[in-house]
Image 1 (cartoon, helix red, strand yellow):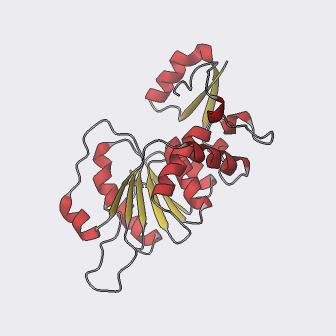
Image 2 (cartoon, rainbow, N blue to C red):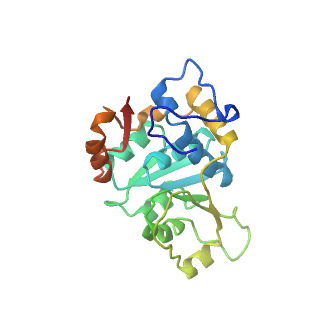
Length: 232
């Protein structure tokens, strides 16, 4: 059911989830986006043995970083907007990289000791996908062989995605596409938020009356706001 920007909605009882009293309503608003992030992290089979780089620290990327961290992974957050990176840093990721000022590949190699196991692209920008894959280290030609690197496509992309074959051949990654979430993901996301393992309130949020929607949309389009919540 779509309709996140309506005052009322009708749904089947089996699809409803009861929100615990200890969970504030603003945090509860992130259950769906957290579940989308969680679904991707689960598909990539992220564990405490992994070192994960997440490119794009919008809402889903930020929550994916928190979910990966909750699973015990070393997490590197990458973006070009300092406000987003600061929010990720405050949320507990291990390292942040501003790709507009730093060489992301070199910094990831340094922070992961060249042992990155999972690269995640959540940018929604098709032209970044190829470079995100190349954050993963090349696979050696002789044993011992490390765990196969995984590339997770978690964003939504309008433009065609072009991947350069030769670097990908050298890396030999598993390619994973994640789409939306399932009902069990929603239940698990709520548990993560209610327990405090994921703290969505760290995402800069603007709360405005619904009558200010035109200005709020303009702020979102022009990246003056990351998240807007309408008060009905």
